[in-house]
Amino acid sequence: MAKKVLFICTGNTCRSSMAEAIAAKIIAENQDKFADFTVTSAGTYALDGVQAASQAVKVAEEQGLSLHDFRSKSINPRLISEADIILTMTRGHKQQLLNIAPEAKDKIFLLKEFAEILEKQLEKEITSLEVRDPFGQSIEVYRACYYEMYEAIEKALDKI
Image (tube, rainbow, N blue to C red):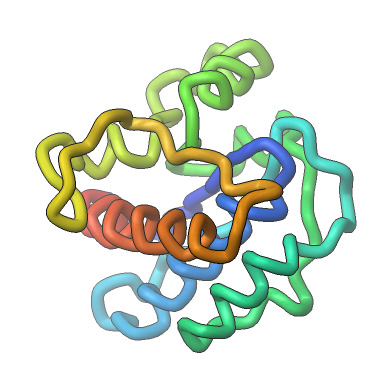
């Protein structure tokens, strides 16, 4: 049975767009394990059809991924109902989804909460279960965000 994973951030041009690309890469590299998985992303305040942030595109390229054809989507009740698991970047995103679809409470989690990354990540103490928004920041902040999400997404997919 297919598993539909939905990643959520604010504008769907930085974190969740990179998360979708990361998950798609992990799934493609592990077809025997994740053959029935599909991934998508959306934003709580996204405008439909916006390109990924240039820094997100560059970081993705550095990792052999492409976000050139990516276009943002705004979250809607249909996307929520179709998803088997929804992974948000912040508590605020999670709460916004619960406001839209309280019946989906059993499938909405913070990404790092679901992945159970509680102790250490990249040999640093974790100070938050939230993934900080890199919007408007330097390319280094986008890279750090990418690596932070990569580890969490690997663990999350294994749990699903």
